[in-house]
Length: 73
Image 1: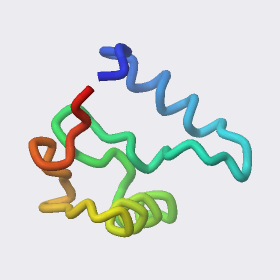
Image 2: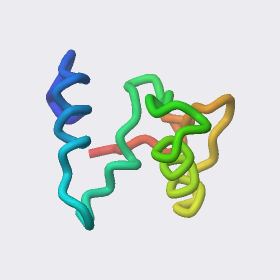
Image 3: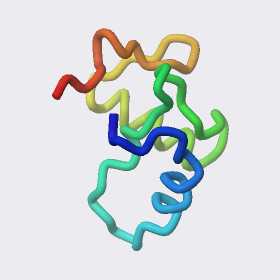
């Protein structure tokens, strides 16, 4: 939806280079089918899952329900 189809590596690299203290909501970046890319059990993966839960986003099988929580421009 960001207009960057097939550019997942570019997006990932950009997010990994965010400066300390950035307020960009990086935790909201998920795959087109709702899966989380960061592995469960990693520090960043666990933080992403917690931030999403804190925003009221519920995960089922490590996946966000796009119909319920997807962005609608």
